[in-house]
Length: 284
Image (tube, rainbow, N blue to C red; front, side, top):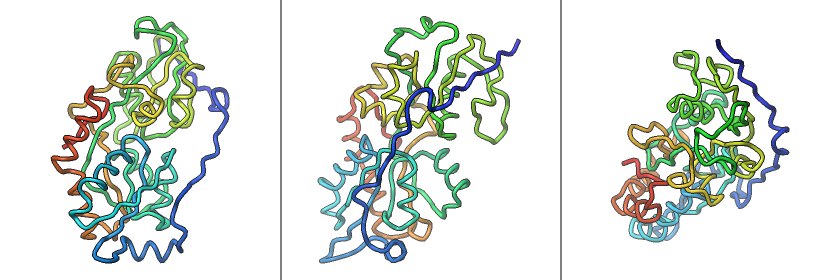
């Protein structure tokens, strides 16, 4: 018999947190969008929005070790959510952003009508499930509460992780991303609590388990490779994070050069040294 999946509203888990964009360029957005990267004294400045970890750390390495020889200077703006970096890119406050994977990018382009393009993947943050109450998947009881993102692109990723580990099954959604409404069988009657992805690590104590994006897990001091109950495989993983730009800037010489630096042997070595347990994986 198919069991009904229960979804609890976000307010039952945590109160919504107001997020503010800080440090963005104060110039007119339309002028910035038209100008793109700026050059002065032979050095081109590129303003890039990024999640603090690991994206901004990787960009900081590039800025310190590789960009000067390439005649680039990176202005790195950090964001604590997944909405504002694309808004800032659209409005011209950023020249590029580096925080998202292809399913999320495509969902946002479709929903918001962004005229964006992207480069190839730089790194993968394996998605994982954590618990402060249970030490094994087998110990998770019937009716347990699962914290899960309300972001469609990553909710599908979380559901895929559960399906891969035989915890539930999904209806066939064709080319559409599955959501909680597409759960076919939920034999242990797990209760799913939807909330914003940036809230999940902080809400871990309030649920039995939470499936948390890699960057937010790392920021909370959680290591996907060693602290999780379940972790997705890096092999053939379609969730590599990449540099995204406005379509008009895809061929911009300086941005192309930045992407080349992000795919350099030096960056791959930095990722492997900085995250040696596989909590972040190079995608090239």
